[in-house]
Length: 133
Image (cartoon, rainbow, N blue to C red; front, side, top):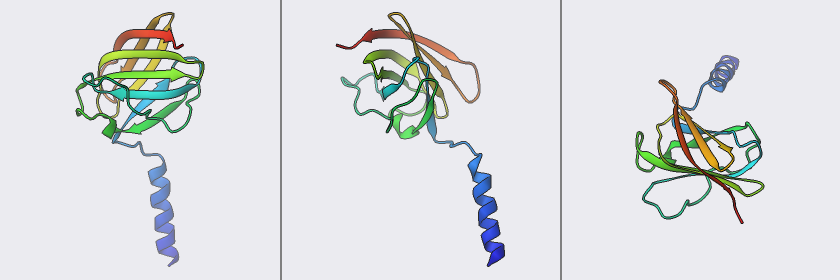
């Protein structure tokens, strides 16, 4: 019995350091807390439900299930976030794959998205940033 328990503990400890392989990551580069992070198909008229369950602190990183990539890996998506002060960042037609890290940030009225894949070179996209009324 002790040997089984020891084996289970070793397996659990080994799994703690492993990266989840069926997700995409969001890195908050907005400089303030993000209340909502969104990914949608370019054909959709609305953003849909936010993908985060809690607010994301500045420089915080979360993962969301890759099921959010409804069109499949390698397709184009629209990504957006809204901060706690109602500042919105929207980027359109961003190529996303499973395991990518999506970092959103702003510079004035320009939104910026950097997609960092698990392998390969970063891709940069620009979009819009504005204060929501």
